[in-house]
Image (cartoon, rainbow, N blue to C red; front, top):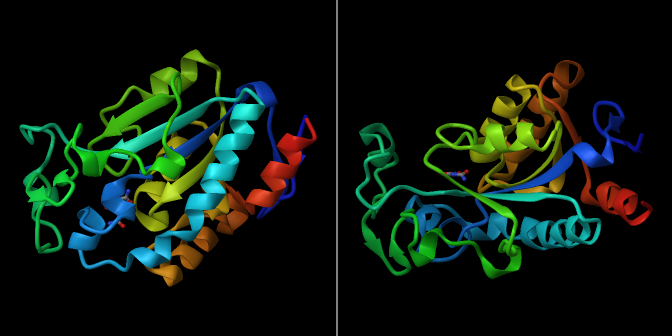
Length: 222
Ligand code: TIU
C-alpha cells in the first residue's frame, strides 16, 4: 500500500480508492472584479497554490486517477442563497449583483467559472455547490461511494473557509483526507497556518497534511 510521509503521521492509501479534489479555483475568488475582491481581500495571497494545483492535476491525469472540481455558486434566481449569506461582509457588490465578470457567484456566469490554469477536462466531475461544504446539497458523497473512493487529496481556496469546511465534512462521512500544504491558500496567511495545525493536531483529529512534492514523487514512482 502506498505510504506518504505526512503530518502528523504517514498517510496510507490504496491507489484505486483515491481522488484529487480542487476546491473553488474560480475567477470570482482568484481574479480582480470577482466576489473575493468585493469582500476587500488581497488576491495576491492566493496566487501561489494555482501552479501547485495545476501540477497535481497533471500528475493525477497522467496516473489515470479521478479529479473532482468544485465551484461555489448559486442559481440565477438565488433560490439557494440564504439571506444570511447574501448579506455577509457588507461587500461593495453582493452575490447575484452584476460585476465585471457577470453576476457575482452565479452558476453559468464568467466569474463563477474556473480559472484557466486549473480548469477541468472533459469527463472530470464538476460540483456546483451553494455552501462552503462541498457535500451540502450536492451529489459528491453519492458519487464517491459509487466509485469506492475512500481517500481524498484536498486542494483549493480558501484554506479556512471552503477547504477546511469540506475536509471536516468529508472526515465526518468517513473519508481519509490529506490536505496539500502548498496546494491551498488563504487571503490571510496566518489563518492558513493555524488551520493546517488545527486539522492535524490531536493525532490528526480531521486528517493529514503534506507538501505537494511528496504526492508528486509518489505518483511519479507508480
Ligand atoms: N471568502 C472566503 O475566504 N472564501 C469563500 O467565500 N469561499 C471559499 O472559500 N471557497
